[in-house]
Length: 499
Image 1 (cartoon, rainbow, N blue to C red):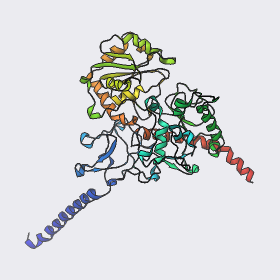
Image 2 (image 1 turned 90 degrees about the horizontal axis):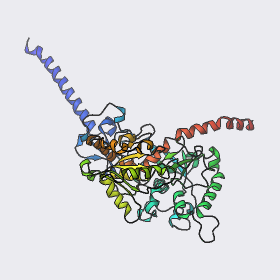
Image 3 (image 1 turned 90 degrees about the vertical axis):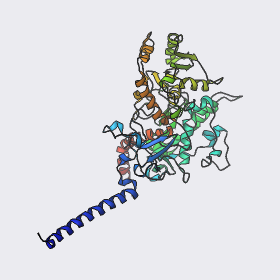
Image 4 (image 1 turned 180 degrees about the vertical axis):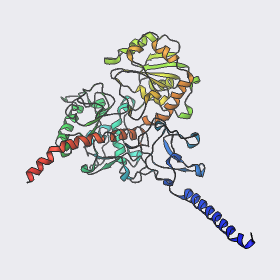
């Protein structure tokens, strides 16, 4: 073949090669500088370290791109935790091994258009909320300036703190209206009730019970009872309550004795509770209500400082009130079974005389921590154990657990029926059969999920406040369903009146 006849073929081949090279170069350029949405979401994994959230981009080394993480009804938190990209050898095909994230924006400031919940909050007088903390504010001021942390009234310490959920949720709603506040986008406060998914009642009911349930001086009615009566009168007179009979209202009553006077009268509302131990099923149940974690009292152990199996010499730990009423009989039965065992710490304890610090040190040195039913099915001890990365042993047949629709507690807790636990030798034989590898797997999981039980301000993605709002959002469809059923005949009757 002549040289002239070969020239067009060579030229054509050269053009094809140059075109392919340009196409590859342009694709790489787009991937490098484009928005995250060009990348598959499996490349970006959320990590939660020291109460912060980051996204790692493998294409740019160790550089971080921050993004909010907001699990939603459509994309729940799955059982396996977020981890660093470099620690993931290969994404699993199992649904339970995925962590879904909503919103890959670089900004961490909440976009109110993407909020999971629109929440209307009543501007109740100070006496119902921050006034109970001794805060007065200015004459025309209902709420403290939450944009300035130094001006936020502090909540009383000690045992009061374990039921402080109403305080954290109220602060979080107020902060949603602070410009440039960095927080999750789970719930935002709206100022028009007709736009709201939920109507929040900012009554610090647990604090009211703890501090104001006793009579003083010549009082015939305690402050706690008086506030509940006032609240019932207020709510029953509101059009917002009458619209759905209170079914879209949210009331926090975490202390088991809070709202004793009002709970039956306001039973149609959604409650945030510790458990159902002192409630009739008609008043509180899983269909409409949310179980929230106690605020743990011991200090959280950082994951990188958590003691592994071989550094925990105590096999089983329990310190607290041993003789309890109601369902607490199991405690003193176990005490007599375990008190003389050499690798068991089972003693009476209280918050007095440095009791909380002692409990924290003891749990951090123990492999298993007992959570035994007492006056009620639940106790703060479970969440102290989680914060200490001590594998909880739950002996409470009627317990309800926070966020159990998205968390599998069997991955980091041991469950034993009370009737089995009190059999001689049963409990210790079972725990001693759990080997180091099995325990370590639960310990690792504890470190991964501990953030879900942390209350803090401002709230952060995946913490207790964020998780509670997410749990409430999963009740929305039930509220909407009841509302639509209520409208079946009401609107038809209104049409008849108009004609």
